Image (cartoon, rainbow, N blue to C red):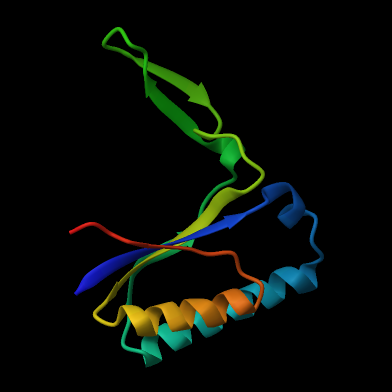
Length: 116
């Protein structure tokens, strides 16, 4: 079986401003995603939301054998990774199909197979 990382990018600032109904619809979409995965024989190994990117800590080599530690995300972009799923599956095509249905409900997804 292979493992797949489903990254969930989103523009955090915009997401925080959405009305409660939109957040509730998103939670229902995730619930449907979980049901679709189980029905397709795909196993969620772990998953969940992440704290806001402004609460991240970035660690980089300082070029002198030490580490430079800074507050905030590693990269600056409009979209940040707000959550993830790690899924085990032996059916990549089926998993992609489920992810396409999930995305069609308004979800942004980055689909990545983990290197063996």
